[in-house]
Structure formats: C-alpha cells, structure tokens
Image (cartoon, rainbow, N blue to C red; front, side, top):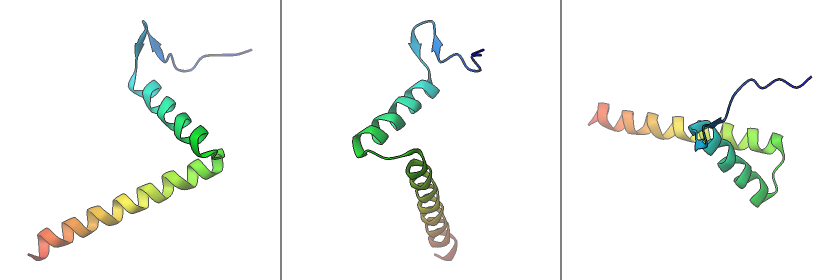
Length: 63
C-alpha cells in the first residue's frame, strides 16, 4: 500500500521542497550522477561552505 507522506502539490503551486527536488533531479540527470554521488556532492558542498564561513569569521575577528 502506497502512502503519501508529503503533499508536494499545494493547489497547483510549486512548493519550496518541490522546486528543490526538481533542481536536484535536473543536476543528477544532467551530469548522470547516482544517488551516492549526489550524497557525496552535497557533503562536499557543506564542507566547502563551512570552510568559507570560518575563513570569513576569522577575517572579521582578527582584523
């Protein structure tokens, strides 16, 4: 039995989750990535974002 946990179609309007899912699928299909590769890509994106934030914070604290 199939159960819907989330309703992505809110009266025909695009929700933020639906737009995010479509963007992720577009990236995955364009570069022919597997689900695991998408997971690794998002992990590296988070790591890179954390490094950039720490460098900016370090710059403002030290100067």
